[in-house]
Image 1: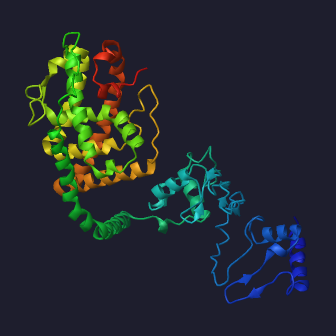
Image 2: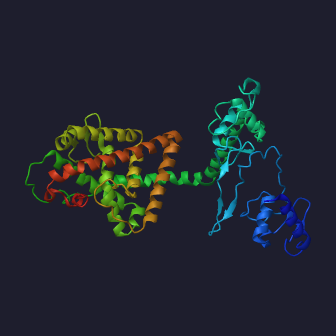
Image 3: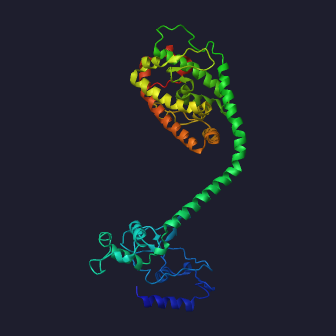
Length: 445
């Protein structure tokens, strides 16, 4: 487009439409112009003249000081200005079709005050602060810098970086980096401190009683009268290791259900959600609970303060084989390390996993939907937060991170373990010989 023609058009509009079409007004800092009122062709010409994309928003706010770039900074005409356009939803979209002013590679914005790619950005940061005399060009400084050739001559590449306007004073020194990092860390600590000042005292005051209520409910489950809940009919087969395990699981399941019924957050749920949570999650919770009654020295499982018959590791080996026994015992021992630190942690974990969705994702049958997912999610978050505060208060932040990370890892391993042994259980179990409460937990293929 002829530049003189553009200038003439602009002049004509200033002369004939100054008060009516352009709606211009002058201030000390800027000229405000409504380009939307112009015909399409003239708007295009104005856009090109002012180096604005034609589709950009045409409003320039008054009193906004514009920073004018030096002529040498506008070096590469292939480096196009980012154009912000509004889509049908009113959201701002950006055109990322930019070219690096140094090597013409794809760029995403300004680095050190010039449009450049990530490669040239990193190159400039590494070399701009050093003495440029150490870089020598073999072709008298006449090398062409492109995507293909930019690695061949550091001297010419660096010179071109300076030519297009990249500023070495914008590179942070090591001292400035340390200062910036320290300032960011101080700001982060201030935010954390402000947050803790706002919520932590109240949470910590109630945290002890919150955990105590869970512990009390857990201990009270022992009082459950299990008469008539076990084998309500004579067994027609020998008590094998598998059936010894089933019997122990049945007793534990009944006590855990009694424990959950004593919790207000479980009691307020509707009956369907209660049944679904128990049915889908209790299978995995039994595994975590096993660590609370495990004696690693004698390899035996026994509930404290009860007359329950102990379950020995030999029963597991007899029921599932040596490989499964080793795998199971390894998981239980890793969970037992948390119990050794504080058994109250594991008792709260039993509640957190009760209010979980997706624990049975690895099993063959679909997990039933709950009616009040949001309510259950919020309850689980509350217990998880209280457990975190409890661990952090008594054992420190680092230990809290380690325990939560370990619990998540162990949960995944338990999911895999139960999936792998389910098929074996289906083949060996006679459903008629399984107590009703456990029969409802078994998901047949």
